[in-house]
Image: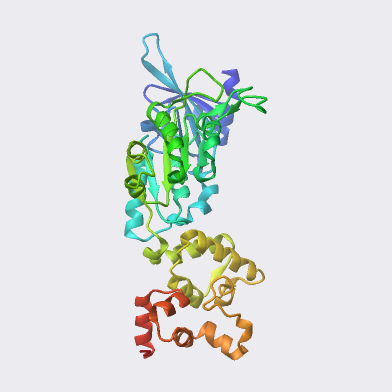
Length: 410
């Protein structure tokens, strides 16, 4: 036990009771070693840990003597007798704070029914190893959902490897995906691991998978089918135990009909399909996302500025909203509150330079909604569609506001 004494380790018997624990581990948890011997594992860990011990590694939480929570990775080794029967478990704990990635997952702050169902589905999918295809417009958070699934899966302790398929030329596909051996080509002075080998036991994320050429798709299909590959210049097949998650902003089934994407590959990577709705279809989430983001910057936002953000259509989705908020925080560096003037440099209602207007007119243009709508309608000759585009709102919203302000442009 001397080697384990300097680690956060413990041994459980087959009744899940602690038969030994390192002094450092017990002290960290606020106990003496003797206090924990004979206690069940759920005394110091989350209540579901017994069901997770069949996994070799998993993410979980510890409880100390004052009920404080520490998150990390549990590394499990089964202790077997001569007949292969489980006699207990060696448990080793490593610190890992999932909360450090909270800001990346602001996209999932939601009151939207579609998004809630999507996240419930993703939670179930995370516990399996099936291939997942995530679709959605640019900026909706596809890569973040892929990472979220990985972090909530039993593979969390192993790598999450992202490949941007649109950035890999066809000629470099094999070397990037599968690696190469020393001497495979001029300049290959040493072995190089490919992405699939780096991702072994973890998750391989194929971003913009629809951009792969048909030739690259054929090579990927062989790996997806067998989980076997050969390094470029090598002659020994290797295996990689990876979970595959793919993402695309294209309609892959339509690409299949156009013969731009292999049908056999589609059905292998799209065992489970998840489509993220665009931000304009979940506008009730904008205040949640905005306030959560600004909280990390110690900023607040005025009511009129929030209304201004809610009215936008956000065709760049979360990515566009986040960029606007980043810019607003910079412009309001010496203030605690974001107001509409901090947003209008990136979200300008009209193409003209505001400096060409008088100060009084600028004030009306920025803060008087009726005046903004009147000006947009005048500029477009009463064309509601073009006026709505100028204002960054939907035609239906423009129509409601025209009725509200009794504006009539025929």
